[in-house]
Length: 286
Image (cartoon, rainbow, N blue to C red; front, side, top):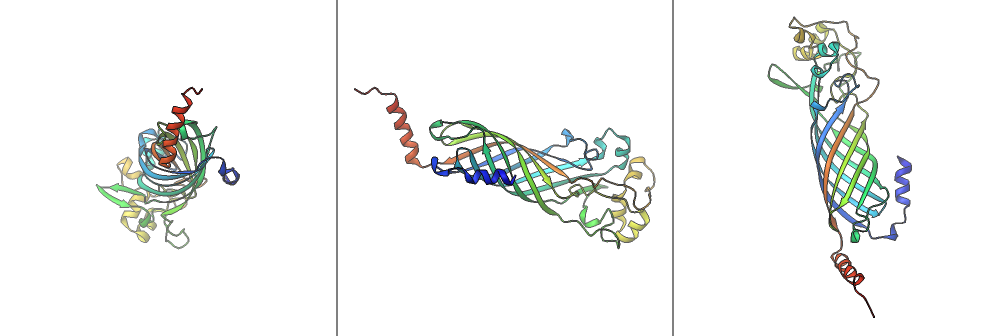
């Protein structure tokens, strides 16, 4: 990733005009984590909405720098798993994601809407982003914010402290750009986010024994910490503290797919001169 960004800045930016571009993205979002069959599959039925705005500085036909702000909704539910043991765990969550990102793009073979000289190009991208989240779930028709409840015993002496509701991610992916005119572009982009938290879904480590969690963090925390009894239609199930609840071997991943529409802030004189160049190129001279 560092090599890609370094290469983009080494490109000879004086070879063609630079310009700014602004646009929107509308699409879909998903996640991979403990509530997607223990990080083994992405469930398409859990796909949420995503949208955002971005500004792009095109400093060369091969490269651009993009600043973006994105909203997305992701969710997960054990009921969607085909594994009976995961179904019985019976956990669920949803959260809104707010992200700000700084991304470097590399166009292959190159993109230049000037005179529609290079009107189409695939591109790859990578960068860094900062995002916030706040997992929630429902119990008896009431929505609860999970982080504050400490469902894995956060805050109990000897257990972890409450996890942060923000973090850094590494965005990366591929896309395609097409210039409709000198000024308007459309595109399609698929991106993934490598995060450094395993708590987007509030699940990561181990259970705390029911009565211990009830005493330390309260009735709602205990009810949402182990929901197997709810699934089976029995009294709350109690398992020994330390029994695996999630899988902390890998952090959670986010996925964004979207259609982009953007406008190029090209100099009007340049646009006009292109039209004159086209007319001249079609004329015979004596």
